[in-house]
Amino acid sequence: MKANIKYIGCDDAEMNLFESQYVTPEGMCYNSYLIVDEKVAVMDSVDPRKTEEWMQKLSAALEGRTPDYLIVQHMEPDHAGSIAAFRKAYPQAAIVASDKALKFMAQFNETMPMDNVITVKEGDTLSLGSRTLHFVAAPMVHWPEVIMTYCPEEKTLFSADGFGKFGVIDADADDWACEARRYYFNICGKYGGPVSNVLKKAATLDIETICPLHGPILEDEKLAEALRLYTVWSSYGIETEGVLVAHASIHGNTKKAAEKLGEILTAKGAKKVVVADLCREDMAEVIEDAFRMNKLIVCASSYDGDVFPPMHVFLWKLGIKAYQNRTVGIVENGTWAPSAARAMRALLEPMKNITIVEPQVTIRSAMKEADIPALEALADAVLSE
Image 1 (tube, rainbow, N blue to C red):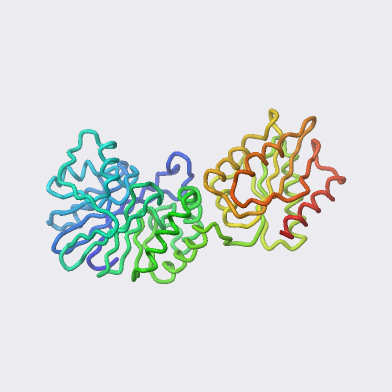
Image 2 (cartoon, helix red, strand yellow):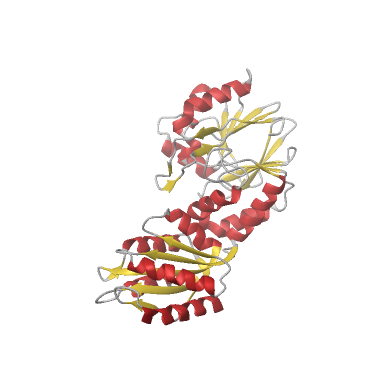
């Protein structure tokens, strides 16, 4: 960290299901920072699971001083969950936040006094002495109240949830992209437009350091790579040329067809092929791969006149995360009345710039040698797009 910026965040190694839905085997971190100048600013608080630890770290980092400001960039409880404890300990410190954030703060903290607050918006500044904080509005990255904060004297951008990742502060420090990608597409993926807008603002700033609210502090090559990937991700561009074959199989027969299709694609020269089991693998990982690669083939069993639920959930999640600009193939399986393809098309067709290729392949009960030519033809069609 910079000499006048101290890290006071907390690791939560026992957090194994973030937002009650995302598996985090390496835990999670809630980042908070202290800027020391003539005045002292605290950058965000932490999840209530770590309030006591954070307050102790804050007190030690203050070294006898008293904070003048608490900057609240984002009001989700994993970052704003200790505001009430801070206010009780330091009632003289002003809370600095956007107008929407202050409204949300009152909703989360019914009994907390809401006096001594400073409302800021795009372009506003706050002097700490020899350093000045510049506020950058970042609505819908990924909540509407979000602001980011730039300190030109330190060439540092405090980026709220932008550039975050799953894991404790130093987890996979050399492989930022993997868990940052899963984090981005599952949490921020719907909001590519707002993220692009913030990237345009960031391009006008002289940034040497990015301090996110989750994951490691980014500098040098890691910062450059993060900016490059966010440009690709926010524009729904292609990071990796390849095909994801995602399957939802009840008794294993559809899985066998998907695995055979993966072999065919590889034999035909696909640069990368990933075969994913939607019934057993982490759904967030498969969604990450769907956005990372440019082509998708969905293989599913028919079920109750519709499609097997794991596939329904997968395609529904892709839809709400704004999946777009991709080529998709369809394989269905059904014993007496195949319905999966119709149901999958209904979920895919409302998505933006999705090309569904032919042939659509229908397997009756179990894959047979007679089905191989149709799988070959589908592979050719997908790879030729």
